[in-house]
Each structure stands twice: as C-alpha cells, then as structure tokens.
Length: 99
Length: 389
Image 1 (cartoon, rainbow over the protein chains, first blue to last red):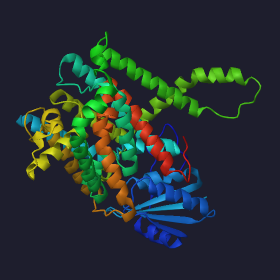
Image 2 (image 1 turned 90 degrees about the vertical axis):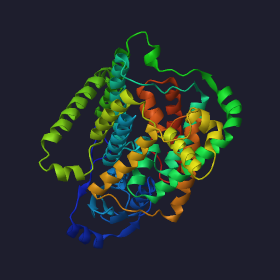
Image 3 (image 1 turned 180 degrees about the horizontal axis):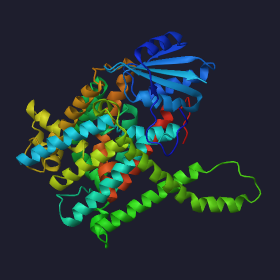
Image 4 (image 1 turned 60 degrees about the vertical axis):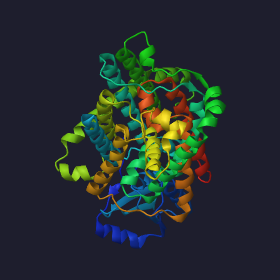
C-alpha cells in the first residue's frame, strides 16, 4: 500500500485465502467488530486504533460493509500493510499491520 | 409507452449493476477527498460527468433528446444542496448510493429510504408556505442549460469545457508529481518552469493511465471470475454514461429523488391518502396528469433490482442489520436528504451528475451547496482524527 496518489484509480489491498485469514486472525492484537457500520466510522475507528498500537501489531476489522475493504486501508495509508479476506457471503476481514 | 417502459427497466437494471460493481458513491467521492485525499471515486465521477456532457451535447445538437431539467437558479440551490450534502454524509450514502445499497441488503439504507420519504412528505405538506416564503424570494432567475444559451454549437461548447476540465486535472496531477526539496538557489526560475510543464506531465500521466486501463482488459483470462471481483470505477463511469445517453434520447436526464418523491405520493395514494389534492404532488410532480407510475419511477425501482442481482453474483449480498448507534444516521440523514433534495431542488445525481453534464445554471449552484455540506459534515465526523483538506 502506498499513500493516496492522484493518478491511481484502483488500489485494492492484497487478498488472502481462508487459511491465511485464520492464521492472521489469531495474531491480531485488537479486533474491531464493524458489522452493521457504514462509512466513515470504520475509517475513523481504524485510524484511532492504529495511532494507539505499536509497530508490528496487527489490527483486525470484521465488517459487512463492502467499501470498507478499500476505504479503511486507504484511510490509514502509509503507516500500515493491509490485507483483505472475502468470505463470499458479504462478510469481510481487514488485516492492518502497523509498520 | 411500452418501449419507454422497457428502456426504463434496462437503464435501471444497468445503472444498478454499474453503481454496485463500481462502488460508485458520491459521498466517498467528496468525503474521502477531504478526509484523506483519496480521489479514485472523485475521478470516476468526473469521467462520467464529462463524457455524459459530451454525448448529451451531440444528442441535443442533433435533436435526439426529450428535455433538459433546468429549475430556476438562486440561493435555493445553495441552501437545499447544503442540507442534502449534510444528510448524505451523515447517512453514509447519497441518493444513488442509498438505492444500490438497499439492493445489496442493507437494512440501514432501507431505513434511510423510508426517512427520505418522510422528508418528501414533510416538504409536500409545507410546500404552500414554502412557495411564497422560500422559493420566490430566493430564486433569482429562470433556469437554463448553457447549451441552449450558447452562441456556439453545443458540442463545441462541450468540447471546450471538457478540454478545460482535462487541462485543470492535468495541471493538478502534474504539480503533485513534482519532486520536492529544491535548493533555495534558483528556485523561482525552477518553479515557473515546473509550473509551465505541470500540465504536460499531467497529460502524459493521463495517457499512461488510459493505456494501462485498456491493457487491463486484454489481460483478463477468466471473465467470469473478473466479473465477480469489484470493477474499476472507470468501467462503471463508461457504463453509466452509455445508459444515461440512452435515457436522454428516450426520456430525460437521470434523476433519483424526483421519482422517489413521486413514489412516496403514489404509495400514500394506495393506502387512502388523496395525494393528488396536495399541490406539490398533484400539480408539480405529477403535473396534473394524475397519480400513477411514471417511467422514471420504474427506472429507479429497477436500480434496486439491478444492484441486488449484481450483489448476489459477486457474493456481496447479505441482509445487514445496522448497529443500534447507526440508526440516527439513517433516520436523520435520510430525512435531511429527502427535504434537502426538494429544497434545492435535486440530489447528487440530478445536480452533480446530470445537472453539470447538461450545464444547467441551477446545478452549478446546487453542486457548490452539496459539496459544502459534505465538507462541513466530514470535518465534524473526523473531528478527533483530523482531515487532510
């Protein structure tokens, strides 16, 4: 993930498979339940949590809001490596590891 | 009439699919620009609006069109637009975003739709008072499309505007790409040169981006899998443009909240309210032709169905129950959108998309109002973490 740039249109975080998602979920230092939320609250909560966490810590957001999978990684920007898992039935996990 | 109904269903379903697959969200377009300078969706909106303007200008010049939508201009656009902008940012979805997310299974946005309906009803009841107390003093002139006023042919005007948009965009991109940290010595000369070259650098990057976009299609080997993944917002912009051109040649410009306000009157009529006796429904919205289902009402209902189909196909459909603390967002945001869209008049689609594309004077004013509303609300929601712009 690079910071917001004026000339990209698409900047989707890398997707992970089911197994990796399970493994990463166990490493999460903090889990935010964002199901039933809409923008921009998940972005704001992710930014606040990342400011609190230490370098190397993993933040997990569980969400059912489709745009969050792109918006949340963009909102935290350069400070984070982001990955996303899609369940296929409207549930998503966003993994944000603070650099 | 049958053919128009068919066009309405095709355009509605198509818009639903493109809005859902392209995550075409007007709140995102402005909110995320202000909050963290994310411009992907902003640019997609710009692409859709500019292309639609070009094609509509040609259709207009050739006479293949039905009507423009040009309400009188004045401060109503600023006031109503601001209320609408606050509402859409607080609700988390604009008029079109609410529709396609309702199709995706969000109860939050069904509730938003319901309270937009409440907003339409409140406005309709207040209309006899608002007409002399609000619209008459705040409307300064008759509405018009610059295409109709311009001494030069509409397509030439559209090309000039599009060239202006591209040049401004290229300059902004070019400036952003400039390396920082020049030595103070000779900086002024360098800056002037860089400023002059900025549009060139920007145009080059625009050409590269377009090439990379087209190459992307050649690289798709599994179209079925690709169609299930989120689509590039530019693809959505192109699809929406094609449908808007079809709609313009057959029916009108694309609007959302006007038809929704008619739906509210129609549905109330079904449960025994004499909607036709209210001045706003009877003589303004249904234009004295009686309360019934018009083609644009059919079109926006089809948007929900199209978004539903696209969401099921992509694995994005599920019935989503909102968190209790989000209910005020849907209720208050929906109401403000409903009321604001009538006070302006027009929503993000009628004004920011269709209105700018038809170069309507009213829509320039209303767009400023809507964007100002989004700006103020974004700063309020982000008060703890701060905004980029």
